[in-house]
Image (cartoon, rainbow, N blue to C red; front, side, top):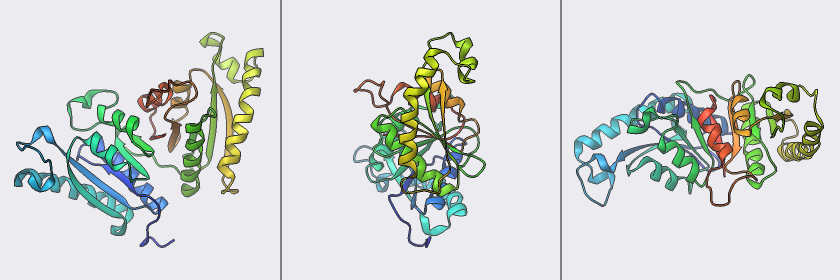
Length: 298
């Protein structure tokens, strides 16, 4: 495929020059190169920080603010271009709030990538308010990258996807298969059954010594895993797929299974979620606890 002719809907990544934004930028750049997608690096000047009134347009910024924003953006573009080459990278300075601008950009994007912490007052939290808002409201898949460096899917780092047979789960499998195929990674499809036994019995259940309940859970889960495997390999017969039934609280178990993964993929809301919630408890837990990049698929 000719890298000079990128395909598909593009990737948008937020960059504010903070340490938390650099791994997200790196992950997005590698994804753009891997999938041959155009990458747009966005720097948002927070409207509350500048002495101007509406309309909030980049050209209305004071010259020193505009220069500072462009300098930060230039750093991000240079870092991304070192991975992708210049033909895939574009950039933009926007004015407003980062969350709102990324959600707006998600209408036309194929993927939005964001770090877990930025420069703002929520930086000390487990998950910044911006990351949570984007994951909850974006109209395309969102990848949240935590920690001080980016782990990428590949031969040594599988793509793990949690499934529960919901529509969001089906879309998560499709996107996870796409990433795994492009990265040459194993796709690991897992489903998590709740335990009725005390938590201390989790190892016994998980090692298949089993109880009547655990066997019933496995029998119920197997058709879900088989269906997910069929969807993943329908157009990718050479994709290596592994499946497994795990036991415990789904969010915690999935997050723990991301330790060695290059990407952990979840649907935004599974069968157990309330219809009014934009982000379910499982996806919420996973993006808070997983140490690898997490993709939330609506």
